[in-house]
Length: 229
Image 1 (spheres, rainbow, N blue to C red):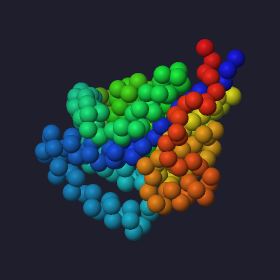
Image 2 (tube, rainbow, N blue to C red; image 1 turned 30 degrees about the vertical axis):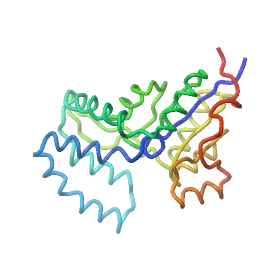
Image 3 (cartoon, rainbow, N blue to C red; image 1 turned 180 degrees about the vertical axis):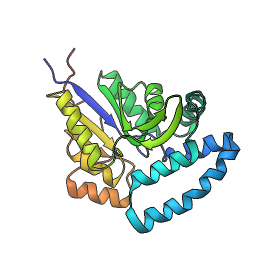
Image 4 (cartoon, helix red, strand yellow; image 1 turned 60 degrees about the horizontal axis):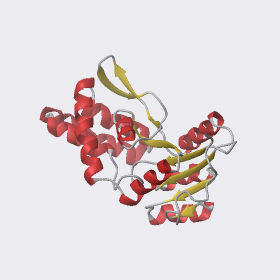
């Protein structure tokens, strides 16, 4: 039996040209203008993040609660359709989309792993025909979004833990992974073939130190083991 091939993609800055959370929240608020007033608390939360605790999960939670709490599942579903459609048309990295298609054509198991929330990341994954989504979970109160995080923020060491769990669920698999930030280097190094793409100067420096490949591979999947049939 051949080894299972897994292709693991980060979302923000890897598959997309930019981060998605703030545009998602702002776009929703623009469609519901009274919600814009709720965003006026964010400078205080940003200052707290910058000068006190540096907790990205807490900052993310504050933004979600400020802009989206109280929204119904129907409202979120409607906005997801619009947001994802627009993102796929204008916000994707063309090379990354081609790599996803190449891995899919080879029969690889596609996993989208993101620190962004499960409010909309699974919708993006479905549109791109991923097999599995790993992302930050957010609490719902029945049919209404509450907004508190119910999982760890899927970033840095938490992404590494998720990769280790993915291996445990798929023993003997070969994982090819793509990420763009310095925090992604941690889990990229733990994969069989990790690639830092679209990285900043600092991320590139960290990847070089860790021995992580920089840039898209010349051939996306040609040297990967075959997946079991």
